[in-house]
Image 1 (cartoon, rainbow, N blue to C red):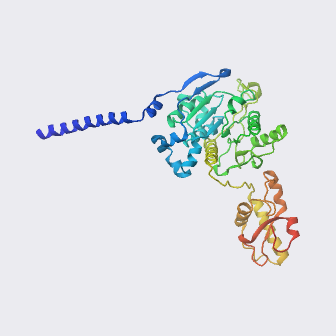
Image 2 (cartoon, rainbow, N blue to C red; image 1 turned 90 degrees about the vertical axis):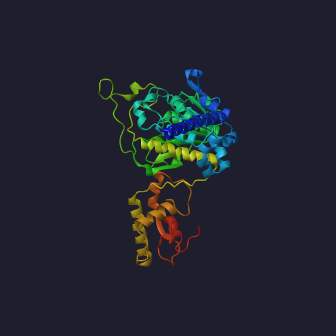
Amino acid sequence: MVERLKCIALVGAGAFLGSVSSIFLLKLLPRRFTNRLLKRPIEINGPKGCFIAQAESHGLDSPELMTDEIASEQLTRNIQFFGLESQQKVCKSYVVIIGLGGVGSHAACMLLRSGVGRLLLVDFDQVSLSSLNRHAVATREDVGIPKAQCLKKHFLSIFPECQIDAKVLLYDASSEEEILSGHPNFVLDCIDNIDTKVSLLAACVRRGLKVLSATGAGARADPTRIRVADLRESTNDPLSRAVRYRLRKDYGIEGGIPVVFSLEKPKVKLLPFKGPSGEEDNPSDYQIVPGFRVRIIPVLGTIPAIFGQVMASYVVTQLAGFQVQTEPVVNLDMEHYQKLHRRLIEHEEMLYGTALEVQVDVGEVMYVVKELWHGRSARDQSTKDVGRAMWRSVNDLMLVRWDRGKPASVSNLILLRFEEMNMSRCRLRI
């Protein structure tokens, strides 16, 4: 009995000491940090009746952020990857994200988690039940609230040190100054409406702002075909084709805008629009906002999420000054590579009387054309032949030996145009 009482007394004493020590440690926490945790965003009515969630005291200067024990520990892996100085550049950055659906919400979320010091979140729309299959943070409780407000609410619990402004606002000419002022380091265009998208991209070019644009992520399923390249190089995407045409026609902008796009052709089509009667109707008669689509694009939620992740990765590495070499866009199919392989064999037989020294198969031809020469002549490594123009130009290309004294192997083949090949029958000087 005495032993049992001793055990109870020891357990009680341990619990008491643990409680006292926990209270003592909590009192030692920096007052600045505990204040941040207790503060809540203030909601006010902005101009034109838009909602603005102010983030007055959540942002910290980069040097202070890096000395904050909790914040720096949260960003430890990024600091180890980029280095402290480069991560400080990220923390000092200001990024604007316009369009907070499947693509924009994921891009914004990873920019936040990467330590971007200030974010402006812009979207006029609300969270819907059908958008939960692709939204980064929204739950059923968020259905019906503005997307910008939804992200703001969740973001403050993920990285409260970030200064977050959320605007329920439609981007147009009248809101351009309000959204694009303040000298953002990057603007992310995650809009799926052509008129608004073109207007935003043209404004960014005019203002000299860095911008990254997302093209169509709907109706696709292959994540391995997603690329980052100049707008001129985007193919198989009706949205980017329309944007490219409008920018050139209305603003004289030929390219120079990086975009995230998929080389994959859309797998499914727009669903037919049915009116209240249940029969097919004219979608334009039901538009709440002129120019915005009413018909539904089937979306596999993983693809817009990956689009957003790609955008965030591109922007964060740019902000940190970290060099990344993107994969060249060579959108040729197997038939093109087989044609180039046949031409090589025919050329060898015509020139040497035999094709026995051809030491490459179709797969190796694909490697030489795509990885080594990027689908272009060795004499012309410019990017003027892109997209569909590249498909046409392959009809003028063929593989030939660099050194006639060596076999036609991977290391001894170059890609030339017909006229360039006929100019020289010996080693080519490039």
